Length: 551
Picture 1 (cartoon, rainbow, N blue to C red):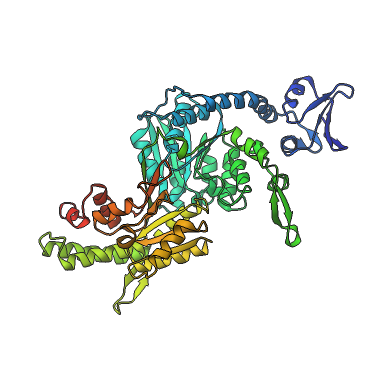
Picture 2: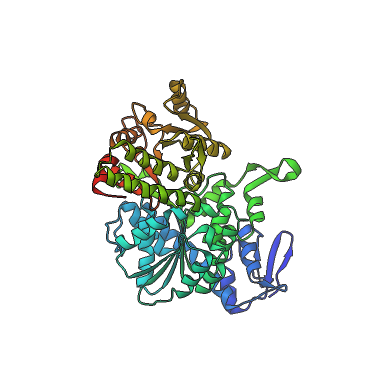
């Protein structure tokens, strides 16, 4: 069957009877009875599909082509079903998880078990992780999948593992590849071959391309891409690796609350992984459809077009949930922990200081309030934050792990989202300010030495371009109204529960228009950070807590 092109129309003459009906599933198809041929308008979708089966000038009626066209033929029915699910007031499902799902989670589950590829565009704190695992469990119990690959930012791999272990109601075997060298990761992938449970591999995006061959050979039946906007740059190595993995995988989920962080062009790479039939496999064709180029040598996007069409297509396989739409279902406060490690240099300093601290605590008979003990406790926290005084009492940088974690977090949030960041130490605040300014954020800072605090607060509250305030927790945590933001990030709290509780109240107060607020704790794993946040969670001062719980 030759593919011909003339007068702006593709034509496939004389298709055999077996293949004829399937070719009618290609978008824009129309049958020319006189010429006994299918004709197509060369749109993004039709070209992408037809070229997929085009070899040496012929449309090949292969089994792969038939399978792909059968999927396309079923899409209108599936999309109609999804639309009905979204429109229902209430829905009941039997999900294989231990917690009762909220209504919006039940809809996500139902849509995710109707479509083989689904985008759960659910804002942070709306329960997309549990919804996603419920979908995976459903498919496992039906015998559709036995190997699940979960790709997520490094800081969220541990929370993913905890959620799986605590909340799913089906057998699992987990291989978490966080903080391992590539050779060891590859070895563990090759060993994940058990058959008595759902095999789950957890890996961060930056590692996917490094052990791509092993992951491809392992052959996941389902891939969950958490914070899918991490692959919005189609040219990045991690994005290209995800595209290739996705091409061999039937079942895929893309999870994100912010699919678009910079502009509509963010969509293509994410959907290239999720379902390339939606926007095609060519970014250039996608760009030409939805953007108008101009500027220097025609390389700059000067205007967008056809955005209603883009939105409709994107949502045809996606379910959008906003906090504001889930007033009954969501608790008023969501707390999230994100984790990082320590670099080798900082780890060396930390271990030595930790030994000194334990000795001091013992010498002071467990009195965590003794000045020398508090000083060493303070030093431990400074190291975790990336800075330490040297012998000349100069503050020197020793690590940037937590700063990198913060940068990755902020990159995933909309550029106009208001953020409150609490930190304890001045060097941390300066480093955060510099890093966020490099990212194009307009930042104000508030410390004990700030003289124009009123102007700083007004800038953050009233200037739409001022999207971040970095506040010293002792200063910014008391007596301020920062409810223009619904998200607060704790980079490094102090040891006082009272200060921490006051800081929580800066955005969670009368006048807060958002239906839910989010607190994000940045935690350096295996360090004093874990002790601090555990004490604060238990509503205790850190010094008091340490007497009963040695770090």
